Amino acid sequence: MDENSLSSAEISIYCKYLTGQEVDEQSRALFQRAIQHEETVLNGKELRLLQFIIRNPFTIGLIDSSLGLFRPKHRLRKRMIIGFAILETSPLYFNYFRPRVFSRAHLLTLMAKGLQEALQGIAGSFILLFY
Image (spheres, rainbow, N blue to C red):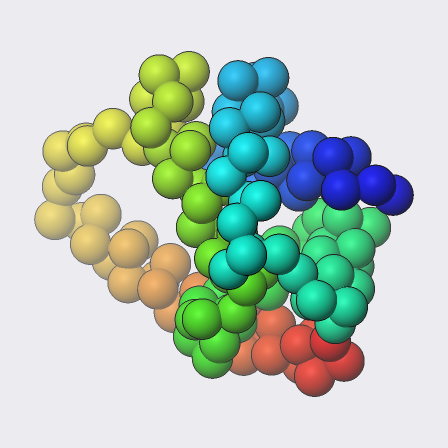
């Protein structure tokens, strides 16, 4: 897989992970341009992890949580943050990221989600042992 098709698949997975939707061409092009900096070029081990994610997109939540908790400076994590920022600032995905008013009962849901993310981070760390 060449760099363009790899980064195209990468941003598609990030978009589905965050919004459940397909990525638009403008966001795809912005992402491909943004990751060409030295700090986000992946080495062999990081590239194998990205290829694993592309082959197994259901693992993105586990790996995102684990990198965020245990390896926040990992280059793949930096690429995720760039992709997330591009999607969050796109008008097409505004409804997924706009502020909302929640009830107090919703705090319980947020706490449960936080616990879920912590458990996913631990589970994802087992995947990272191999990459």
